[in-house]
Length: 483
Image (cartoon, rainbow, N blue to C red; front, side, top):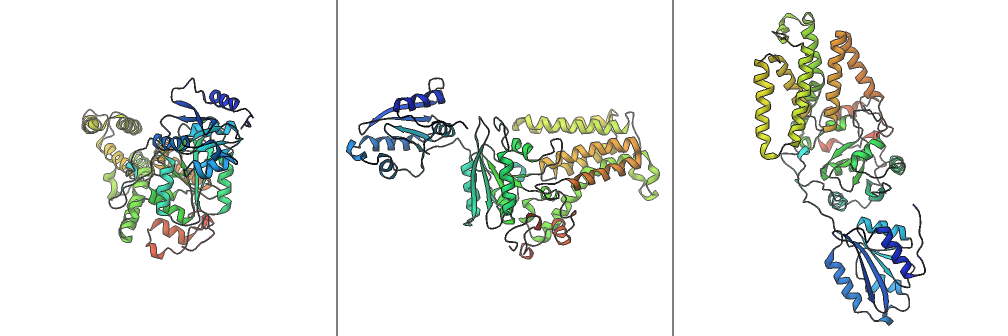
């Protein structure tokens, strides 16, 4: 950042900030020329960010000052006595002062002072905390993160009152200067992982973060064409708090209701808050059902295609699993058309107003189901098994993981169609090796399966009771391993 020291002339300082902020070009950029206590002052703020009532109160307070009340030590008296506000800061760099104004605080330039006073009396447009659509629970809290970073840090602190909870501020983007908060519990989180994350963030060189956390993820994940997510997202403060207690690091980005959980293995994307809102046995059952759904979403279509092409692989007792009629269109094309059709339906549902969502569902059910079968586009078995795969996709807690699994399912279909049993086996093997070789912040993506840890793997597969969890995950290298 180019540094611009304050000039000795008050007028030069004001002119610099007027030009730097484009006061005459933007209607919402406000500059107020003031004269209090015998001194010229100038206030720079953005309309819509500043709290008008607070600034009016401060201006009325300053208007009552006499010239002798500011002498000597004018800056000290203003900060400690005559500007009664909580969040005050001073800077001796005009460029930095201008950037601060663009973020929301108000800058006060005073004649005779060698520093600019920043009054952080800002407010942002914000919606109320609501339960996230992607992470609903039957019982539990109904609040969720919003798009304002200060609200999100408060929601996190509300659940973690540990004195070592750290909220470290930084900004990313040469032009956007987006606010980013690195959140972790210092007494638990591994210092090496925290420093590694900070170094990665410092290396991000871009104009801005238009897609907020998704832009940062593409810089942190490393493999740009890797479909699998190495970072978990959540919009639930209770889920974020649970991971902080384990030793994870949370990234909160201004403008996004999703916070990033780092590091995150493959199995973290299969967990859901609902499992811990029920009794341990019920939670373990729900987790096993979810695992079965995810496995079915990846393997059931390629396996069904395999046995349809080579029915001799099935014993006589399971011969009914194969298709009765292959249909006019080749089976592979039926699957591919149906997959594309479901993705088209999903995208249409996203862009459909809520009032029309029911109508869209009825049209899709009739077109993809009944009519498509009657005209011979799909066979009944294709619709059945595709529905099972789709349910498994939607049962995956992580939206990013479900999309990655969908791509793998299509690739497995293609390799099975080309090479039969060998293609299916090779495809599954390559998929496993790919995931095993992946890393997330120097941690194996498939931990605790590889590197193997029996106790941790049991805890991943079976939702164990919380009182029996006496240790934090070893792969996080926590400073305090005991819960």
